[in-house]
Length: 566
Image (cartoon, rainbow, N blue to C red):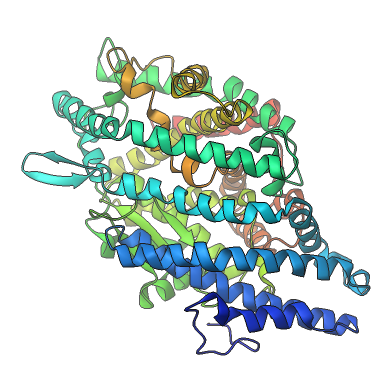
């Protein structure tokens, strides 16, 4: 499973920047006298990148698993501060060496074109003066995890993470939900100024990065830096508008129906997670062990090979699933290009959302395995529009087998209904977060008060017209602070929305012809990033389309599936 090294020694470890220099200098100075030499050079460069990326990955994984261990944070920060700037400078040299080689035109165009366009974009945007800024940014961005990871509340006699406390928002007693809601948000408010200051610092540095690269603003810079070759900023704005016109009305209908079922005159924000018939919260599993064991069974039902992939991860301890104090919030699947086994991190507390997260991250893991034999790291590093297509499709496809988690038919229907309602609700939220970031970076010198106004304006544009936040305005104005992406990976969020639309289309195909849909899905995933995004979507049997008519068609399908679950 682990890729054998041919260029870097198997027992090699980095303890100082000098350790990696001989390999970087070899790549920099090596003579390339033929296309064969160029391919060998690129292979050795890829092996070096795989080693470096996995080394940093493990530092990040260990740090997020335990944010209270300063040694783990120091190990990560050492890499970010001392290794990454050096590697970044050499990477630009390698990009130039590759593009200027007289043999680059002899490479197989069909195989290398996508990788080469990424290299050209990196070369175009590289500025030496941004290297220290990137290092500073990476260290600052991680402060969000430390701040959020330390947030706990005490309810009854138990101190618990906000993720665990969130389970009580499904409690059938309205007063319990109200109390927990207020406890969670009061705890967030304690660090609101700290998070505001953090974002202000990040925005200032990011604006400088953009200006150094010749851009007026960070939004336009990031559209290029994220290598969005296959759609424009105008297409993104079309996405925002299409979601507002086609999805938001359906989300409002769901909220109105919820209010009627609950029998309330006013639907409050702490009423949106409880079962609308006031049934106890769904409990699909008790702990991380049960979650992974049942997830393996579900993936076996989809395709036995997918279950085998998750079992490899379990057997090799490439999982950290349970929520606990001191653990960073959120969840991720981290591809590891040397181990060729991805790592799944999440904060499971036993609820339905955790089940969905496991299916999501498991979809990423399947993608990592299916694209693991592509050779060059450049072919494996996926655009998020493709990566999230794999994970979100798996959420929907796997739901056909959730009877492994739910033996009771009514609970199974509730779980599927909750998931589909979440699919509809997340699309306007994605549009909110993305448009908010457009506004933040188009006016980078705003004050905290002006930022609050930008958020309220955007949240009201895409938010529920049914849920009443009266009396909780101070919470409402800071809702954006719970979104990790705004702090750690700016502008990486709309990809979820794009991929969600694609996932709905794949699921629709699956409902009509399961085997053909899975074949198409798998063929698309095996491409990694060796083809343009529209071609990968076409291979998956779906369209790459943000238009209002297409999205309305997909929403009609989701609504019809929801109606079957009433």
